[in-house]
Length: 128
Image (cartoon, rainbow, N blue to C red; front, side, top):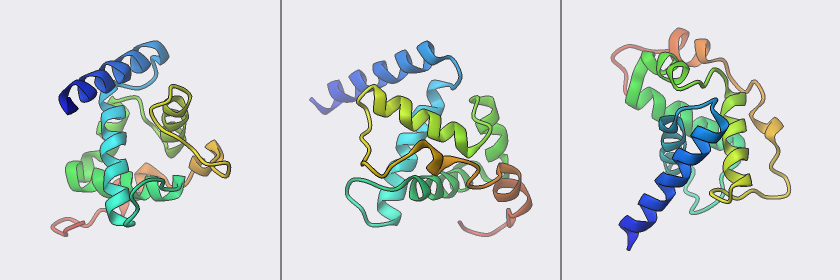
């Protein structure tokens, strides 16, 4: 049954990515992985704030892609933290994510620069 649920969710993500056209389906899959990463990091079972999610995105990207994170994101159509906010609120609109009354798309506005966190601040040989 869980496999059917994943297949259905993946189909929905593909439809959202295709309809919106700005971001690759891979970016949405990564966003859900980063959500789980953030929930584990901040020891939360459900809701994380926009800032916490962005911290999870940063951490997981560095773990998976290292200093190539910015290039991977750009390949997916994601150029700033604002883009992750756009994606989150598209997923909220389509019922794949939920939000609280205090969540706002502005929570994602220019939180960090991809150049700063993925290139300039990257420490070669270190564990994230």
